[in-house]
Length: 319
Image 1 (cartoon, one colour):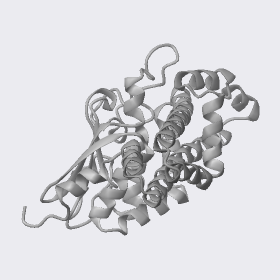
Image 2 (cartoon, rainbow, N blue to C red):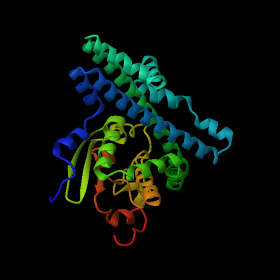
Image 3 (cartoon, one colour):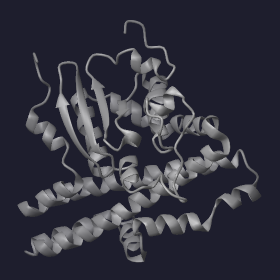
Image 4 (cartoon, rainbow, N blue to C red):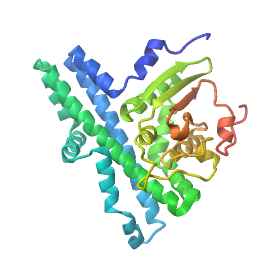
């Protein structure tokens, strides 16, 4: 490689997850460092919960345009919430911890920092584990509620209905703002920031390799559909749907794509090409339903034409 943009140590640091970052800060015992780390981690976790909530709201809005109130009411099944809550262990105590975090994250950061200042790091660590477990339960709950709605859309209207919904998500101003802001940064910062979202905000684990022409981020276990697969969320009578219609933007070569995973092509490829003229980033899932991880590729000098063509888009001239 002629000239690298990052070092191996930097790439390893990019992939540290939330528990590792907070654990290291607690071990260091510096209250200022802990404040900075906790603020960033809790901010990323809250943002991911907000993304799920926004996508769910867009889904309900989409349904309101297709259904009369009586039919839509029938879709708001009480058992949906019960099943999802029980599956993910979101009991009252954990829900209250998450609500407190969302209402006043600064107070939570101050609480843990003061425990460290007072020489009680073990108590701070125990408190963090409680918060982290509650956050994970809330993350999985919102992810699964969203997936259940998408499953219902697919079962009612098939690939065309799901495609229409995903197109609406890709056209949302917030998503477009994210794409524009992300592509305005140098590529090594894009990789760093995206890895933070995946490992901290989305509870995944990753490794990154820099090549001559690209960065390759390997999502060893995805915090969303990967964990859903491992937990059997698409199996049994309460399992969510897999798409069976062979559309390039849906299946990515996998005949058992989950409804959750269909957003990747529509938002990260189709919408990204329309907004910023390239996929962001290129995503390939490996193994049935992504059980073996996903690959996120950031090309240094232009995305190859094949990644435009596989979602029915024409690459810019010169590629």
